[in-house]
Image (cartoon, rainbow, N blue to C red; front, side):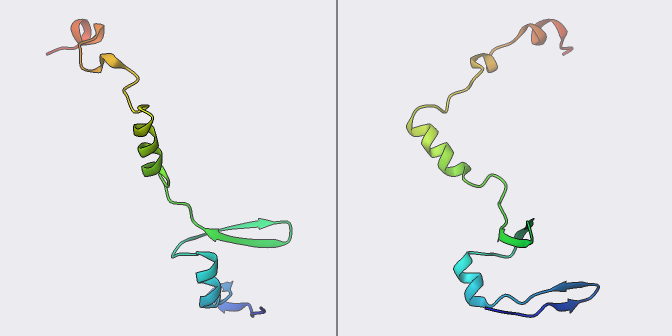
Length: 84
């Protein structure tokens, strides 16, 4: 499929047909990258994407425990350094 480069203010752009947007899974935000002489457009990654599944998997494998078991008790710093 061919399209034309159009002027958008001081920039230039292209119109991407709706069918290509749907087939590629692009949303409101995209990432652009130049690879050799090509411009690659891909869906923008969301911060923390996949965390829900990772947490579920950790819970299933009982790997979701605290690393520092002493967080509920007082420490040397609490007893000697902290001013109440």
